[in-house]
Amino acid sequence: MTDRIDQQLAFLVEADKLKSVIRGTTLNDGSRHENTGEHSWHIALYALVMAEHSVTPINVDRVIKMLLLHDLVEIDAGDVPIHSAAARDPAAQAAAEQTAADRIFGLLPPDQCNEFRVLWDEFEAAATDDAIFAKSIDRVQPVVSNLEAGGASWTDYNVTRDQVEARVGAKVRRGAPAIWDTLKTRIDAWFAA
Image (cartoon, rainbow, N blue to C red):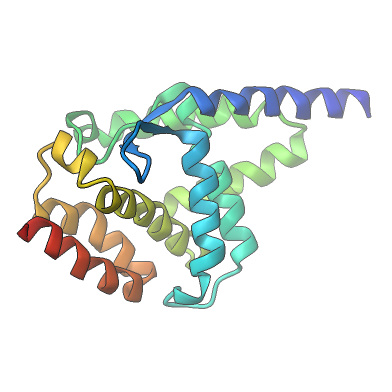
């Protein structure tokens, strides 16, 4: 039992490093950039609150687990904002994230390692209803932050309305079209101003 607890504690200590990974998105008030730990908590809350808007029935507990786990790879692979130049090499980023997932989930006891890695892989594949909704919600939170913060990272990365639609809208619409319809009105107004 001691070995199991030691492994779990090692994983949790490692996960604390997410608080040091700074993202491209700011807090809603624009005062500073958020860290990935904050983002993970916030999107889990988004999923809990917005689950009723999934286009298909979902298991919100599984979705929240995916959202809490999916960005752990940023400890090793870093955060790559979708509108940044670094986002233009998705194959290299995917390879770095796979390696990070092997290492980080490998800190856990084998049963938890397998369970968490399966959830992480499911999120990445975005082929199940739960994963599709999780991916959608992961894209919603930065949009809301940008709208609330006066376009913060959109301005930093010279993002166009078409880029938001292509890089974000398609993913949100796939799992939560009603949420995208509501956001689209606000996005259009922001870009028109």
